Image (tube, rainbow, N blue to C red; front, side):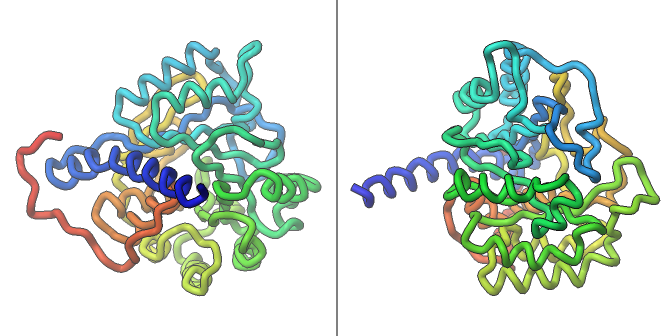
Length: 331
């Protein structure tokens, strides 16, 4: 019975994966760029006041349940396949008797893959999410310095109770936790599916005490790459981690869309309407990973297949080339 269940799960993952063939071929053969992944900040409310985060400080209109449904439909109409519900803390969203579970259930009827990012202090229990990203920015003492007293204790307990099989840790690297990231990755071995890293972005411009310039990132990235090759749970591909050493790297921002708590939708760069956009300061590795995948980098394709669908496949360092084969085909 277990073998049958595994086969059913694999078949379901492959069916969902096939839904991405159209956008991939449209990009490579017809030059069409449309959003595939969207982050939807359904609320800016948060139960933490993290030192490096600008969003808990923001107020403004927040949609009711019917407004959220309309935003989900508009994102789907753009072509979005992967939806990431985020905040603030998304589990705090409420509209009367409606809560996050109702939003999730509605989203799952629309999108083939629905995920969440959370600060990890609230249990997500049996919520039927495809993937959960839990913020953890270092070993407990470092994480608590950034996010609050004894926050790490709650996060690690919830990862232990609810994280098996689908939880990833999302780490934002800043000057505060820069030197503790390798120890955290080692600590998480066997506890989570993987760790995805990104670098802190200075939303208010420079100077910023949290910002790590590209010139200082290389030694840490080299160590993270070695940890990945040694079997530690680094989910980013070697291709993407290597590109992060550059001041400017591959970014096809048209593959992304972002929705705000008020329902406004912006196609392209994550920073639209959120801060001063300067590419040389960016460290949003997810944008780079998706761009590399759509440009045929097998390591990034493999990372995406593993993270979103649990399918282990191709290795890094190669490129699947459809360039030179573009036509007037419209997909």
